[in-house]
Image (cartoon, rainbow, N blue to C red; front, side, top):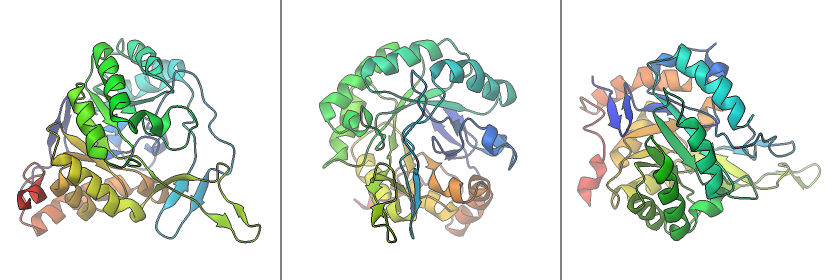
Length: 306
């Protein structure tokens, strides 16, 4: 069974990646399994300056998903570039490495990339212009097709690595944003970031999260995320990394058929840190069950019914 899949700058042994923010910078998951089994690893989003994130509480559980308003907490560019990235490169030299970058404005991304370009061993950048849990930047950067075009174009000018634009689904027509990013030179898309939701403490009547509203991940968003990948795969030619509510190997197959070339596992990692490992082990069985011999033959399989 051939689980390999190819993306610009990336040759993955399988299509399974941990979503940014769900396994930190790799060290957090080393005690559970050998990270080399992954198709690749995506770091927690870094920003130019250190961020402490939002006040507690920042996590709220739901019946069909998990809400969070972490707020891009991270130790900042200098620490990640000097400590975290070299650790991954030195200890996992054969593991494809995608560094996720966030910011409030275009120059923030450019400054980060100019620094990271100097590090050998990074394979690609995930450009997070869609975080729903910050006041500046965040979803606003990928809600306007023109703004998404401009930021993609400027980042592409300075990046020496492929860039994957991570978009928000919280727009009227995400295909317009996806097409703008493609036109501006994006090498791929990550579809998509969290939806939004909230929970209320019945004892106090107070919203549970400090920001009241947070990003929703988990099974509740699976059908919506699948639809986003499918609709964008019909109009763009660049590859898509799908994300949203994936927790099983069968879920992965659906995303491949919808048009994703690889997937990211998010909230499921928070409930079970062995999720990626289990999915990778089960994927050959699921493909065989549906008479598939490779991951590549599954990609965009559902689009033939258009």
